Amino acid sequence: MRLLLVEDDPMIGASVQNGLRQEGHAVDWVRDGLAAELALRDNPYTLMLLDLGLPRRDGIEVLTRLRASGSTLPVLVLTARDAVSDRVRGLDAGADDYLVKPFDLDELAARVRALTRRQLGQAEPMLRRGRLELDPAAHSLTLDGEPVHLSAREFALLKVLMDQGGKPLSRAQIEERLYGWDEEPGSNAIEVHIHGLRRKLGAEWIRNLRGVGYYVPEHA
Ligand code: CA
Image: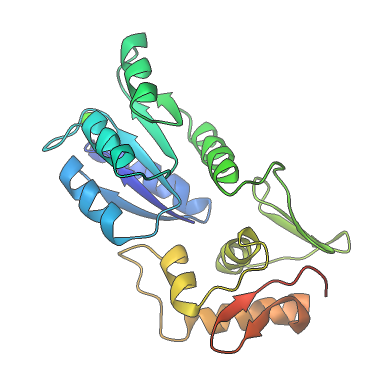
């Protein structure tokens, strides 16, 4: 999934970006509120991690303007302000959840999973398509109950497709969801990972609708 991180503290920003990348997410990192608004306008994010004390435009203002524009993007506020009034202000401005710094990266990753699951309308933590079962928290996949070992990118790609519940995604849409600004995918990167998935799962699990895109069928 592609996430937007808005954080002006270089240490916290770098550690959150690295931590969430290790979870398999693409993470675009901006350092101020105006840059956040530009990024939101131009990219399909699944979630935003938002610091409140930011240069150029305060986090609360970014959030208020985002909600005023009608966006339902999940927002997780990262606040150094431990005061109840600040957390309440964030939630009232439209945040879905918050974490008080310093926080544990495992907890952050778990909250990201919970928020994106809710956004996608998935009641259960496990993703299932027929005999395929993907566990986003454990980074594991089984087919007919047998574990299948995937590379990090193959796993991320399969999750992006399974999140769609059978709706096809074009190569460009997959790229937008898998890669951040500073990771330019090779021209045939998606095809390579599709090939890898088909080889490990069987070609019937990754279908292509000609001219439209790739999808994971309900049954194969
Ligand atoms: Ca800050």
